[in-house]
Image (cartoon, rainbow, N blue to C red; front, side, top):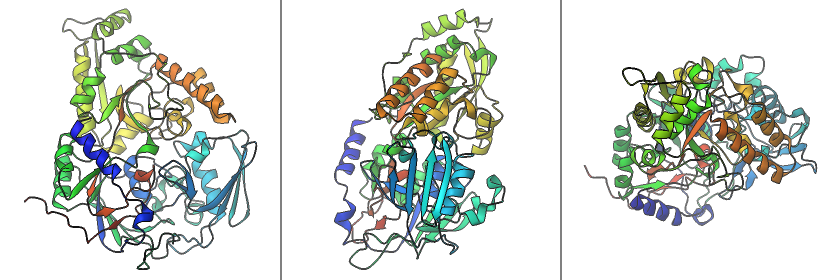
Length: 544
């Protein structure tokens, strides 16, 4: 990472104020304009875990729990919870008096219905996490008892709004869940109420005056949320996003929203700050998915050749401006408990790549070309496009001609996860705090071809990998789970259905007078109920 930017980011984190310190100062009011890019396909994370949806919907929906800045659980819709000694029974004691935005009471029936009909059947990650659930009991409106056939230690790592978003049973039961109109006019229990979605322009939320969270009320008697309104503005052009932030037309933008080369300049402006906190929970990694169902990619030597052809250090520097770290495994190194370096590695070696392609029978033709393929990149901005272009040039040197294709998000997800009509795909996944939550979905064979976005896009099918995943899912021993995940990393890096590229370092650009935007390790997928504008702060105007 650029040293100047790193120092600025470190200073930002070091001087951040805690909620407790600010309790007396919080004031209510104001409209926050947040940049969201690309525009969400759907407005509930219960059905689609794409980053834009997660960023938006956490403000409408609450989770059963929240996470603090040390990964510790704190109450949300559940006031408390109990885990049985054998880790096969999880009991939630729900908060009383919570209402959906339409006035209906939130009860245990909503949790039970969502778990049985959404988390277990539709949710890209929760199908594994809640796969061993044998029953859900609701002895009263405020108690949920979940019974597992095997221990499920990963559950507590994914119970926030993004990991386990609860839907209102009274609006979904008996409907076509995936096509329910409330997917795009959501009714939640969260701090902000949905008002309008102007497609291609903005999504508007307004303050929930009946929000249940009355904690940390300031001396002026104001309660959460403090903002009156949030407008999520769709700004497709990276340069336009930078200009909007610099001019104060937008005050909040996550997921490295500006051209990386502009980050240093914006970080120096007195009216803005760059924030790196709030991404810890998602543990993001960028990778190249390889469609192993293609005849030419069935041979592992060809997949290995792809890996040897890409100089990850140069890729990180040239394309991502140092806002990443070359990856050796799908489990990022910051997850120290689970990560291992003891895996097959594919350092930059184009000569070895060429030799492997020759061995696999893919000889250069008269024009020097061995193979012609397509590459589809995640349509989340210029960084992914430039990643595709870099890989195109890298593979050209070893005789592979790559056609880089652009499309919108629905077309991309259907092509990769539904029709499987692609060769290579540049994409990033969130690994989350436990590999079972975010990593194993990329390798579990059961999700192949089911049109479940952000799952096993490569089409990888391995009995050994499936067994390791299933054992990790049901083990009651954390040390055993750690060992199983390390074996899984060794297995998938040997088979190489996808090629880890970078551990991503995202950042948020926000107005300097916007306070308390980060209150947990999962903030980017958590609500802005604690955020407020300090209108007493002196903020220098941006240059004209």
